[in-house]
Length: 421
Ligand code: EPZ
Image 1: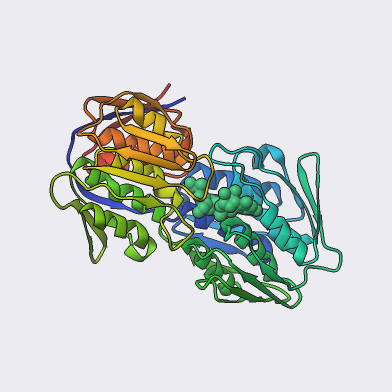
Image 2: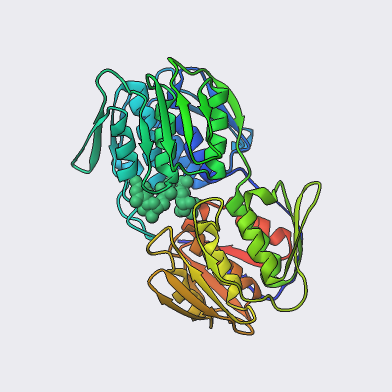
């Protein structure tokens, strides 16, 4: 298993291009199942999760062609006749469950493996099931698979989500595009990835309103057609690289970044004493002066502070002036990076969903272990400013969500390399 060696201390200067969003792509790709005509996505990130989704769709009979060095993905579901999403693929990536709604809309039945355990939380699918059942589906769990069927086809319904789940909103939204009648999803998620999905579905002929408001209305149509859609920028990759010059010093421009994708995050950085300016090409970030100030963070659904930037923010706050309190409200077990940061000399105490971080002058390099995607990059960020060398193991997590991470960091002057084991 590869690891990444980070030699801390270098100031960072230059530009980083921000790729297309993993979490938008993972819901846009299953939308191809809603039409027989081709759906083409551009600005696609080159990640192992995209390769897994490609494998899953191909197993369902979708023709998937990767073009322009993986930047463009052309998909055709004309002969997609298999309604079974196999455990051997689904267990590699939870987001595979986003084929459930589209398969049900396409075939009137679907058999989708339950994703299984996840390091950051239980992550049940009750809200997905609740919504699809409201549209007339019968769903039963058998041998680890969800068996879903809807004799007579999906029907429009009024659905109120107990929690504004991203995945449940996406599955229900996709299914509702081909349902008979009108579906209203109340307390729907309104992350930028949901907006991107609704935009793409409208380009395919769907009738959707309100996706930015939290109440989405979908007027079902008989069929959708093909389209070409550019994937939005990855706001989590953006936030991650914005922290690099703040942690290590210097100034970096994030090409293709937009502040409105990461507003709540920028507000906290501003409080901490970070300079953020919008440029023609994107966003420029630098520390204003000296040590950053401690700030309190509470993760929330969009437009609140994103849980997918919590670990990276903790890495920054480890060397802040003062004590910061981080509250994680989305996932019940998302502080596993804390003990690894403590191996580097950080002062952190965790109680349930709250972590208290008392800033120290400087971290020290150490061998540390990645436990999940965002935790892995938070350890690299911590290593950028640490004294000496940090070796991050189990970096396969990283490949799932960050393309060319070593090249991008080296491009701004960081001293990091991948060690093949
Ligand atoms: C999406 O996961 C993202 N993944 C996650 O990013 C992100 O952390 C999360 O949204 C929150 O923003 C993708 O888009 C592929 P949820 P998702 O359904 O859809 C509970 C990353 O690092 N819940 O909004 O699975 C659930 O347990 C990943 O890129 C139910 O209880 O998130 C969790 O506590 C990690 N029942 C909370 O809601 C349900 O049926 C949020 O889950 C569904 C969810």
